[in-house]
Figure 1 (cartoon, rainbow, N blue to C red):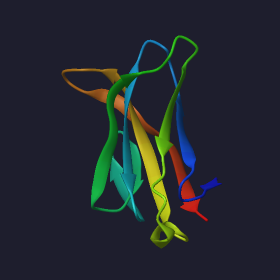
Figure 2 (spheres, rainbow, N blue to C red):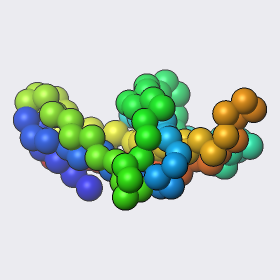
Figure 3 (cartoon, helix red, strand yellow):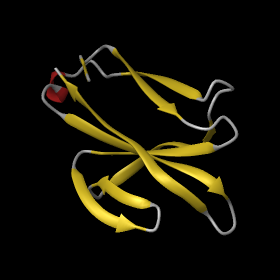
Figure 4 (tube, rainbow, N blue to C red):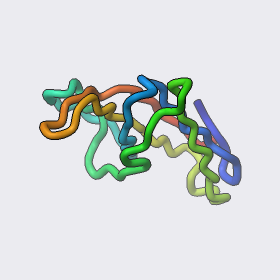
Length: 103
């Protein structure tokens, strides 16, 4: 997907309505094998959403305003989520890899 500076970007996650998720974002991709599946983001990464439940229909949408800055044109942001299936010890899976390019 793509979006324009000054526009709105929808960040969507889908999963089991009884679970919650964490979404991470990075300016680059990478690969690391983990007990939760492949981690596909480069360091450094930031937390976009933390501990957010899916909706009753299994969907969650965050609308984010994109700064109106032409320096963003051509920049790609990569995102990946972790869906928690159990806490203490933490169990779950990495899911929903996606990227957005600003045009």
